[in-house]
Image (cartoon, rainbow, N blue to C red; front, side, top):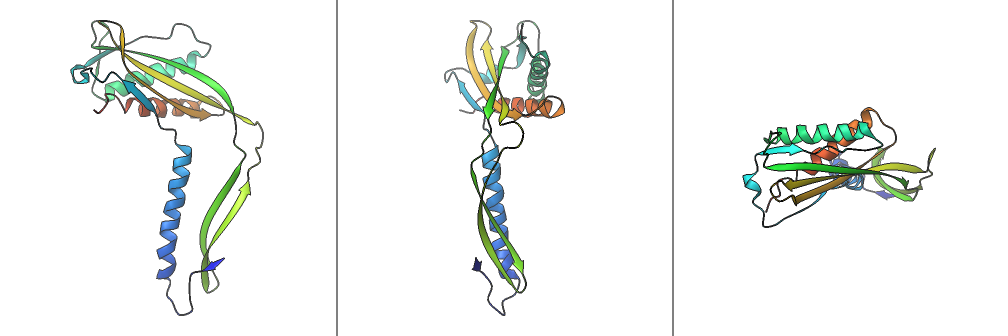
Length: 192
């Protein structure tokens, strides 16, 4: 343990260390939880000409609830971005695919950093812990891929994908799908 305070110092010394440590801890936590969507696109395509879209629907799936949620979220996200849905002669067509996998949960070493005061002193402590998975040792990960296609020559012009983790269906899964679709399409059109 490192003692940060000397006798006679005021409590402002404690807050000088506490805020940066808490901020750093929060950033590390956020970075470890986030899965950043990825994209690829035709670098020679003029995306600024795109104003209207149409959607292809997944014909067969063993998870129609997820397919319907993804389809709905894609349409709503593009409408919110200012694109107009047009069933015939749209500027671009949107297609999607998804896959669900079981992945092993991490049960590795974690390091914690904290600060606090006790008595007339303060300090920083560093500790470790080993996680032991409770219940199932696998988690479900769903990857969503969204394709933007030029309808004149049926050519792929943009592709984005992202993933989220879930344990069960219902509201949490619907929220995960929505957040993933919004994050993927936030990259469309690509900023050159």
